[in-house]
Length: 263
Image (cartoon, rainbow, N blue to C red; front, side, top):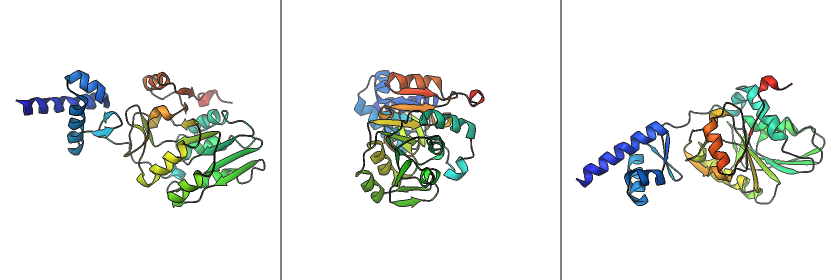
């Protein structure tokens, strides 16, 4: 009888994940009136079967975020949207500040809107960022060492992490592979996870730039919970319900103006 109850509960958990895309341990515990330990055991067994994927504090649907093309290719995708996000995020950076800017196609658009800043210091592990600012006279560019991740034109690994420990910045601006309320900030390249975690601890202010396609997805490697984000800059097509829940967590959400309304 206990086995039958367990199988029925697990089937209902899988169905709940399929319908909601993500569930929490607390929610499941209340629904089935069993302990958190029991739910964790269920999720562990179901994940081993491939029925769902474990996430921080719960589970998400088994379908992963789709594969991401190289950064150079992504630069030409949704250009207008990323340009608007870039302008909105760049407006958060003031003259005289020190800021870390990570790799990615959206952060490259942030950088293009910083060329008029005075006495700005930019620390980066992205060759694309360094290239964009190389000829700007009043911006000091500091590039980390590290192992080259060719598809992203970024530097990652132990050497990168050690160099980042030597500096402090006022703000960190990064893009993300995927973001979910339950799965948190996730990445699909395991060797980069520790580098990502080192980056987000460089400053108390973490600004994440992400277009609407990044929301509600989960990649294979957990980086940090969503409430580590200070400010999220996205576009108006992002899921309104998720944005509202992020604001409830104390995250400042900025919607970039529609590209048609930007002169």
